[in-house]
Image (cartoon, rainbow over all chains, first blue to last red; front, top):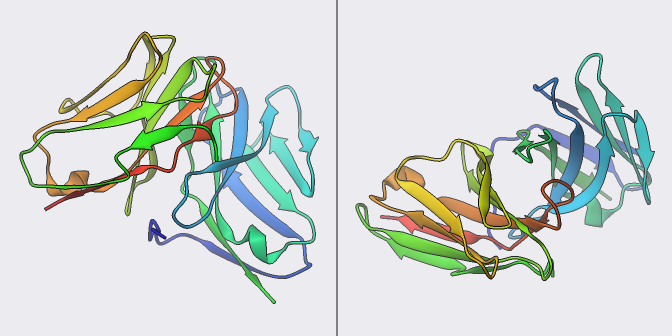
Length: 111
Length: 112
């Protein structure tokens, strides 16, 4: 498959451990935040989202935390599995639908 | 399978040429977004159309243009191509003007 080949920050995590991926966003007017996962050779895939009127949202094995005071977003993955290895992007959107992505974090799950 | 279809998957062309990338959104989705993913720039937002109208514009070059047709498919036109335009171009769609985006598999453009 094709890969982007960016020099991304890398998070190495052992299988079964929890992962925390952090993201700083820039636009204080952003009111919608999303985490995407991109596997090699594929398009980004939606993981979880959160609106600015919330500070936490949970999904299946994933939790997103939003701290608007410091413009910080994090994604927690519980019991990380080999299939979680991918590049993870945070994205912010304003009410006009201009969705901007962060630089991405490479997650490598080791056995 | 996200339901978003992009063609072509791969395209190799020469500098100065013009290409058209096509995107068919998921059935029922009114929004189409275009993104460029290159080695040194990550995922860059280019443009967003909602129900045929341009809704938001990002860092899209003047040599690039896009449109969304009445049947909601979209085309991204890239002209006077330069080596630096080599990248993956993703299309995404969503039901409304904001919300969860569903991405296609991308079109890999190589400019030689």
